[in-house]
Length: 108
Image 1: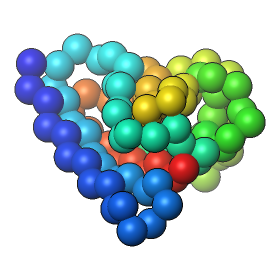
Image 2: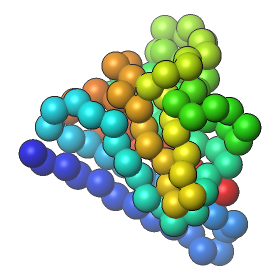
Image 3: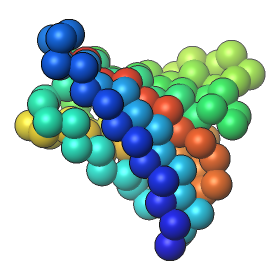
């Protein structure tokens, strides 16, 4: 299994972290540890252009999703789940895809 991940956390800005993730392993949810509980998370599949966002107050595994074709939808599973130290990118088959570059930003 090959996993490439990068993370930056700018201490000068109130809880902001950005990073990327690329895997050639079996499709799975991705756990990101950014060191704080995010209030907003956006995940973009750089390869396809598909994306989703989670905002504070949304239920776990939910997200607002936009596919590259322009369709918006509210998903209630396989979205983003926030924890006290980061978040999980669910196994949505449009956003979290093997061998496709994922970029993310989390704000606290």
